[in-house]
Image (cartoon, rainbow, N blue to C red):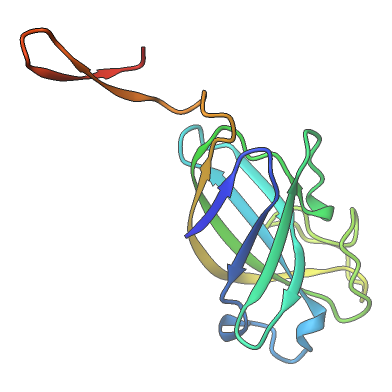
Length: 158
C-alpha cells in the first residue's frame, strides 16, 4: 500500500522489473503511467513520476501542485481517503520524452508511430493508496463523550 499526505510530495515503490512486458528494450526506455482513482467519488488522475529504476522495483516520486501537470509528476490528490492505483508500462524505441504529444495521457491513448512516441504496453501493478489529510479538518472525527449517567457514547462529527 502506498501512503501519502494531501498537499505534499510522496514516493511510491512499485514492483515493476519482474512484471515487465516489453523486455526487448532496456529499462531506461520504460516509464510508468500511474492512474489514481478516488474510491469516494471515482475521480481519476494520471501522472508520470520521477523514476529511479532498481533491480526489481522502481521508485516514483510525485509532487503536489494546485495546477497538476501529469508529465512532470505534479498531482493534486484531493480529497483525502483511499485511492486505487494502477501502474501502466509505457515504452519508447527512441529518445524517451515524457511530454504532451510524446507520452500517452491515458492507458488507452494511442500516439502516431514514431520512435519518440511512447506506447502503452500493459498493466503491470495494481493496489491501494491511502491519502491522509494534512490539516486534520477533512476526515470524519470521532470523539468519546461520557454522559453523566456513566454510559459512554461515540459521537459522529461535533
